[in-house]
Image 1 (tube, rainbow, N blue to C red):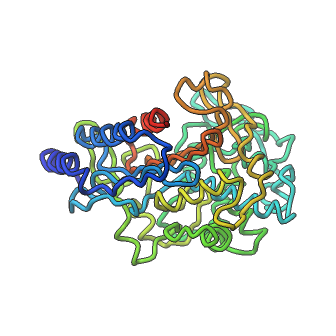
Image 2 (cartoon, rainbow, N blue to C red):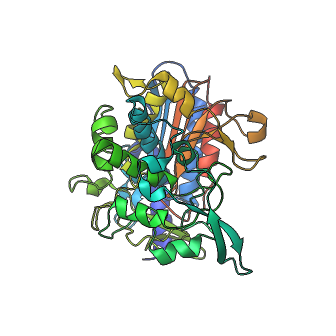
Image 3 (tube, helix red, strand yellow):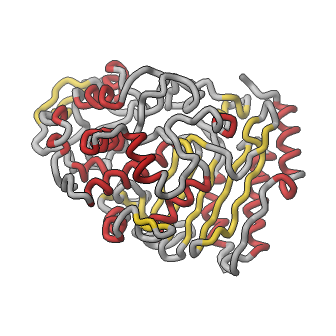
Length: 423
């Protein structure tokens, strides 16, 4: 469905004019930020709304354990005029990865496995993997050879397993699609174990541990959690992470009473602006644009499946910032968190942050060429949600929007706006 341009501009102007009334007030405790500089965040987000780049957003900053800024802007749904609120629920997609990684580390700390163990010790379908050896001129796979090294759990955690994503162009893209492998969100009546078995039947892009390639590795980790714990992934996360951290709005599939709080998913289409997503406008094809409300509700993607609020995810990030503990509840040891945020592999050698266990990490501030801190770590979600954790400044920053493809660079600007406001 296309939003008429005049209707969109009407809503955008209303959002801009009334931001001071409808946005929830910032909560400043202490003197961590300069108020007049925090107002630059309001101005930048409202400008993106007025220019039709985004329909709305929720921004959260936590420093020294205190909420320094938490505001909602614009609309969660353009058709109805429903406003964004600070408890709006968003599809967080790949921000799920950090939560699944914490789940793996919980089991690791309980002594169930070593991170250097072959994953085939627990998921035997990965015992005899093959690696692409020869490609045709059209990119088709002509030859594979037996892998000389096993996929280790640490390879899955750092995306060096050789497993890819169906939405990412690679020699595996066509075989994945033909085999019925999907990116993590689906309406189909399928369970995680079925997808992982299909994935294990495909070759690898390269020898495990030799390179970085973003892919379904964290979905495999979700299945590892299921097999080792004897619980479904949703139940394990609920009992071991969400409930202890009082993350009351974080689910793979939303309860009926929380569904009205889900932000509408949009797509930015050239010449049309923001349109309600049908699941076909981007490189990620969704057979269920109403995820996580409708569909079979049986697939739990460790790499992309959760939905959450800024407040819930802020508590999760604060636990990590506090070296594994929050409000007297310890989820992980400080040594596990230290390992998780330690860079393991370089994405491309020059421009991008290094990869740790579930995160990007800034190992060279000059290389990043933007405001930030050495040792800060982060990730984002495909539908325009993002976060970072900065141990040096004792800071968590979160910005949640809901569109793919998106047309705004406000997520990148937001980090600058937060740092320039520090006292």
